[in-house]
Length: 420
Image (cartoon, rainbow, N blue to C red; front, top):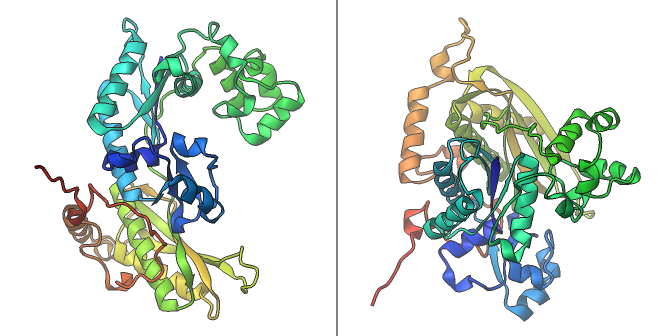
């Protein structure tokens, strides 16, 4: 058996953790540069706010219904996510963190337990400990657990927990699920499935998996078996990423090379921090810049370049050097740039390295210096110590006019409570 725990309206729920005055009120969270809606409370959904709705198109609704609007605060969301995941891992030794707000728990050793009651216990614990509402779907396969989670959210009588004990018993409910809402069924597959009369999860579950394998793929055949109650998709450990990208859209168009260099330097430094956090080394870097292709009145330009390091490294100074070198080669004057980014390429584990007798590894990988840098910034806050090229003006930063405090990651933004 598997349980899928999904945080409800995660970004909105994070905003409510330290701000009880917006409980029960319509709330939306915006994308970078406060452009589009990326999270909505149930109250905002009921008012007609759509996912991806541009803010300027729904300003009248926001004003009319006094909707609370927040800029995305990824530092806050990431920290709360880490706390939620750590607490949930105490309920099963087998787990797979699926996304920032979802985790699978393996329940194979809980055969004598009432899993619905266990789910309610987990849900109550997360709500009490972290003020985070969650929905829990339980099933004999990961796909059925995912569908059970859907019913946990949509059914008022489920109280946030829904268990599928047997694939046969759940067949009437599968008729209510469109085929394109099944986990792992993409848009293109759903079109092809509908063309041959497979319109619901029940229709797909009734198929012969051998025929689906012939007509589609082994992946979709596994989904058929999963819907039939045969577990084919195991829990996966979090594998280190093969590439690391850090990029941002600028708050306003940037024309000066010095500003773009500052932005790229910040992105490269952040990427190097992520690289070291998973104990990996990068073999190269890709740098890209581009103008706003939606603005038809501006001249358009985009370019990227990939550079290979002499040897694998996690040294921020080396990564910065190559990032700036790459930017110099692709930057062109007289353009209004909207976005830039870096990607560290072809990552390997830190212990899997091939020494080069012609290159001083102490220069390319100064581990003591990087460890000291990470410890200082980890203890006293991000960018307490930073490289001069990263700058201080940061004219390129995204617009975040409605950002909430970073209650748990900045000393000067800790919540202050007054008592009479």
